[in-house]
Image (cartoon, rainbow, N blue to C red; front, side, top):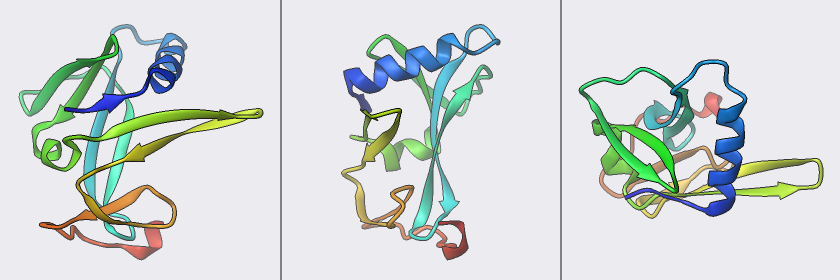
Amino acid sequence: MINITDAAVAQIKEMLSQQETPNMFLRLGVQPGGCSGFSYGMGFDDEESDADVFMEVGGLKVVVEKDSLKYLNGLEIDYEASGMSGGFSIHNPNAVATCGCGSSFRTRDDAGQPAPEQC
């Protein structure tokens, strides 16, 4: 299960409303790399595959590649506005170590493929 706070849902819906391609959805994933071993992927997509798991979170269509789901189960995405800007934050209960930039992690069972120059 992936959790997205109300603030993050509102921000993502706002961003989706600005997309020119209809039927876009939020895609979450994990790739090898980053300074801790795995890097998060978060973006909009409109193409689906048999390797995807579909869910609805807060009225958003969220798609996760099956291979990434084991790393993202229990993930929480939040959004905090700060003055003229804001940003998303990710809390992953599966991560036992993260990098200083917050976009890379490793799990107890899998260290991934660290690449320090990516952080």
